[in-house]
Length: 211
Image (cartoon, rainbow, N blue to C red; front, side, top):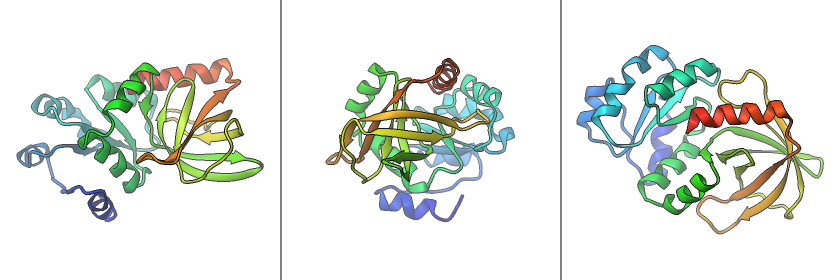
């Protein structure tokens, strides 16, 4: 693992340890696991780990992972798919939210809106100026961006990001419909606008894999 993982998790109030295999990890009785399967061979025995623990399991995959590989991982029981490019501090926010129970009310909201946790680098343009933020959730109707930036509601946004399993970037427009300035995860909620039929199918296929 990158040397930044330990400090980032510690900053979030979490202990972080690395293990060489499943048996060592299970002996540690962790509250949460991050399984590095960028080498897909490591994912062959994933089901064994799932059978032996009820703890959340995050699966770290290559950013270039193919759709068929993602589908196979889900069949084996993969829990949370995490791109290898996700900053440690962004994942730490998500893990801390699960373990501290802060996301229980949010989870009900996500299920109602058919949302999934989605951490990707988003480039977005507002008022002809381009910014960057990491997302936290995704649905058929929109995306939430983790950022301290603030914009007027209903501002038009141009978005560009990647969906795991897709070779081309997802480019679309949206409008800002939500601004979180006091919650633990600050940011803006963007509702997609004028998606094409192909874009809708791509979103639905990706969300089906993640659920």
